[in-house]
Length: 422
Image (cartoon, rainbow, N blue to C red; front, side):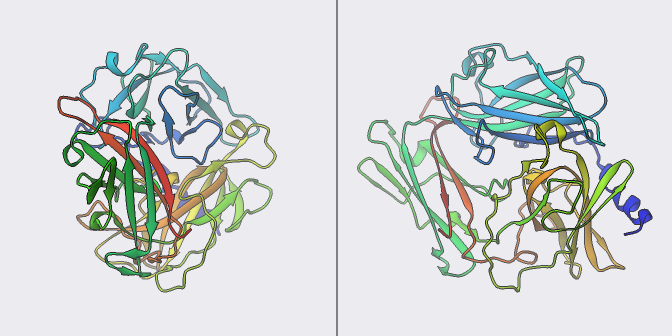
């Protein structure tokens, strides 16, 4: 590809508009808020592909990591918010959910080396000597420079208890048909040693598919109750479009193109990786592929510490198809934080008859999909871009929240993970 074309497409990278940091009515998501702040990761220590959930009082920690494209460090502080099941602030004061101060410095940071793009990597592990959680539920950590209140990054994770046993099963035998385009999740919550006085009023069960926000489902009324077991089944709200396996690419070296990369060239100031041209899969047969359920892993093949030695590469995405009317196409996955906005939207090239987007990404192994969001909707569909196949292996995360009368927050009393197609 000609250098001028690379520069034109690269301009898409820096056309990001800073997002407002205070949206009181909007739920919190893991994200950064400015172009120079990149690659937010939230994971369980020693298990980077696990959902960001730890257990209250046990020896497990959440690790939060992100970069700043800069030559010099910015001294950051962080504060913690407690949230209800819908990821909006709970009524608890910080004295009620923390056994510590809520304003702490980020002391773990380091400079990149052997990279074309210079950056500082910041890292926080929770709980730690300064921060201890006393309540279960959803948490948000917000990072800001010490001399301002402007949020530059935020990270979301959950702290659960083991008060109930949660079992879940995902099947293609749904109330809308058998072995078609959908998957249905059935859930059983056993609480032999935990008192739930009114399951119909006091419980919220939240189910997410592959970490997506847009199609998360909250159910409050069980199908039936058997002794100390609460059953959620034959619930049409728990029927999900099956989607397709995530697409993948790998860029772990600048010496050679990795998996699904057609070309790799350097044009100052970044390397550019052009992915193989993608095509819609809605009319293609299902093909199994072992994926990371939308997540990514940072890795540089020759690095001792990939968090500091992995470079930033301008990745060119292309979806060759007629323009899909009535909405927009977005790149979905953890690489865009599953958020459909100006950072993830694809532009249609009328001359080439294809959707295009350039994302500045750190070296590693990535999953992605193309999601179509109809005009006026906040929920994506994969039908016109990826198709829906009942065989797809999806990861469903189930969280059970309890809020008895008089309580002021949603207590997370149990979680589980199930997979479809297995």
